[in-house]
Image 1 (cartoon, rainbow, N blue to C red):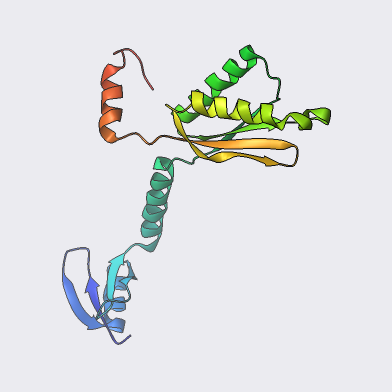
Image 2 (cartoon, helix red, strand yellow):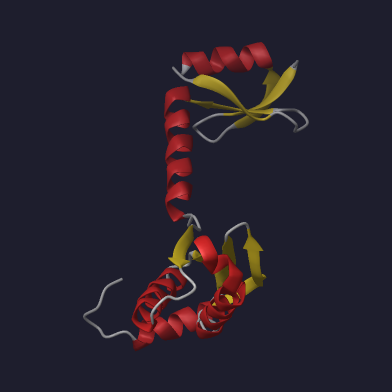
Length: 175
């Protein structure tokens, strides 16, 4: 690299030989950092390298805070699950979907129960039907070994729907 476009803290921008730019940055007590190597000529900025690394790290942490990781929550049933237990697990699934997580409903068959796969399929279809207003089913219930399962993904909300939900919340409630 023979020449660089050097940007200095006082706002001056000059095209100068690399060695001269490094020398001028060192006179100011700063480092010369290449910020745009593909530009013509490459752009270098005079700044404190440690401070620059610190700011980049802070930006990455801030971006990491704002992202939401979608988890898959698993609920296990048996073919002859009682109504109360079914309702209890259905309410958990509704909460999971509202939090933005996916739900995997699994029906486990043990021993001779494998002869009644149709009961497990009916249970999963009923579960998917009950949660249709909260989530969308990803495919049909599938049997793999001694387990049948179905995955339900949360329904994406529009920004306008979220705003309406915020307005309808009582004033004293927090998230």
